[in-house]
Amino acid sequence: MSLKDRLGSQNPGTPVDDVASTRVAVSSSKDAVKRHLHYLLIEEMGVEIGTSDTDDAMLRIRIERKLNDLLDRETTPLSASDRKEIVLDVIDNVLGYGPIQTLLEDPEITEIMVNNTDTIYIERKGRIYETERRFIDEAHLLRIIDKIVSQVGRRIDESSPMVDARLADGSRVNAVIHPLAINGPMLTIRKFSKDPFTVDDLVNFGTITSNVAAFLDVCVKGKLNVLISGGTGTGKTTLLNVVSSFVPGDERIITIEDAAELRLSQEHVLRLESRPPNIEGKGEVTIRDLVRNSLRMRPDRIIVGEVRGAEALDMLQAMNTGHEGSISTVHSNSPRDALARLETMVLMGGLDLPIRAIREQLSSALDLIVHLSRLRDGSRKVIQIAEVGGMEGDTIIMQDIFYYDFSMGLDEDGRFTGRLKSTGLRPAFTQRLEDVGIHTAGDLFAYEPPARR
Image (cartoon, rainbow, N blue to C red; front, side, top):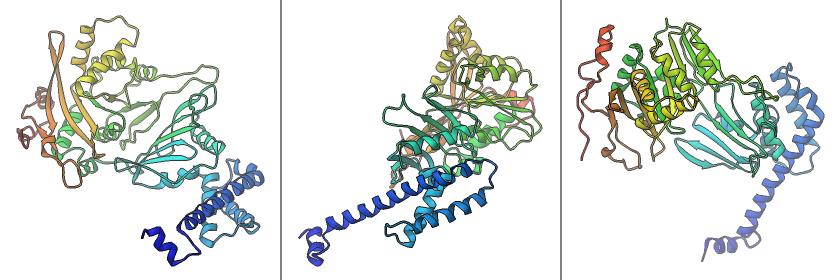
């Protein structure tokens, strides 16, 4: 006899299908009540809610009191827990970010992906899961999107249906609406930890080893130009934030980003953020404009959040004209691909430069490329660190300093057990570091063979 038949025989008046139907009906009733209360609250308190100078704590108390009054008039039978859930959800919808508010507050969630009003996915520990959260309707989702982007002076409408923005905690936001979004508004939020990760955190996560952390520390203090590469969601910005923390506190640092995400602990930090064009198509300030302007601001360090266009040429020229110690990130599949991408970006500047001239600029400007990858088990790790040497013919010379040993295999949970190992090659720039009084430990570059061939 099946489970359904057994349950049915034990309680003939309550078949399994009827129980499931009852649960769905209760859930639908609660959703209907939430939707109804949400509209009533906006109708009766809309002006007060929209006033920016209203005290948040007092406003929340008044909204909660109003919701309880409205619930007392509600004819739908509701338990005490149902009432509490409805009140909290409606408050989140009105004052917070709706159904994604609790997801934003969950420290384990690293990404929130809203595909449409009824489909919300999250990323937790590198794995993607679907949630049961949903928006009331498309207008509700649009209101939340508009609330997010307006807080940082951005706009989103039919004339500008795609936007990059950020939340107050630095979390990165991307939104796309009609007419570009065919199935309804889409929202993607890449969360950042409330407390920025430290180098010790990355060592504990297995992203880097303590040896590599010590190596990156001396490279930054020695004013080497470092490029962090990797694919989408591999942790480039997180590593950039950690690597930037190695910059001495007495230096003048200028950060340049599309959306300000870096959180440096040094005191002398100047933060610049690009600006999109206004509704008339004017007033745009690009990353390239900011890089050029930063050279007039007497920087000791220039940190570019991500190089993705013609600003690559200005950054390389800065590195080659005395502005040492620059750090940036770029999307790529490998350190060699990172150089190829930079070549392409330089050509995007519209200058008809020969490839060899661009490669000479690259080889003399960059010292080190740190490459990250998100592995199949969801972990994010540095898998390659390569030194950029000179030119051999028309080819840029590169040599690996550290490599990730995949041959160490997987554990019983399917997680990679490998780690970064030294290739045994001592980088040529260590002599430059020694010349300025920065010493590297003798065993830092001791050869570590792979686990097996």
